[in-house]
Length: 249
Image (cartoon, rainbow, N blue to C red; front, side):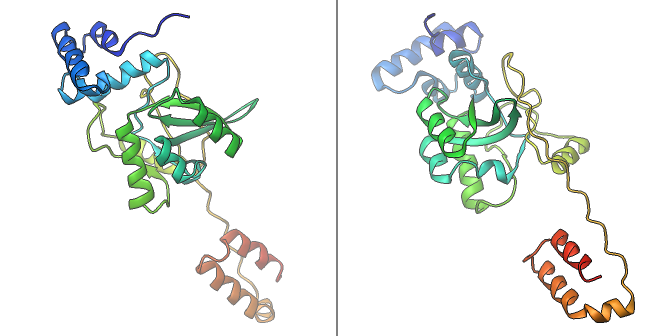
């Protein structure tokens, strides 16, 4: 098995740093300890996108920046909040394959196979890791579970620009709102294609009930009023209301 390239070597070959910067960062690492990439980030030798792409190349795992993506609530809730916080993971998408469902999982450490196995056992999905920065996952968890109270679809808005164009055209915005999918576009680095995500079409409006005759209204008046009240309060869905309404005809 070929020896894994060192992060400094990858950054140097990519032209993200020069030899002098690498030498100084290595001296810091020897003196203070810590991860080389983190030290270079602290010294501002590299930006977060360069570091993320270098990690992706080193670990041979796709890197993802999902700052333009909307993640459905149902996807995020596939993995419990305590597991997300403990292992710095965040579910970003799902897809169907012939062999079963797949969860696309953003991880700070995609080499942690034990966590992937644990999640696979708990939810019954095969786990496909993608790598992103720990700071991004930490912020996503904080925003979704504490500021949004774990409700609704989530759109990550970075504190730090990773270098992507954060603007989106009205057409892109409409696509995100309508389909409620994660759209990686060109944000997965390397040659690995973006995952085929389960698309969730925007729900079609339910047909309005046909006007009832006066005699029918009189016969089922109390039931109809009760059903409408329950639907308005969210106890039953509009679809359930319409189905029950048909029975009064």
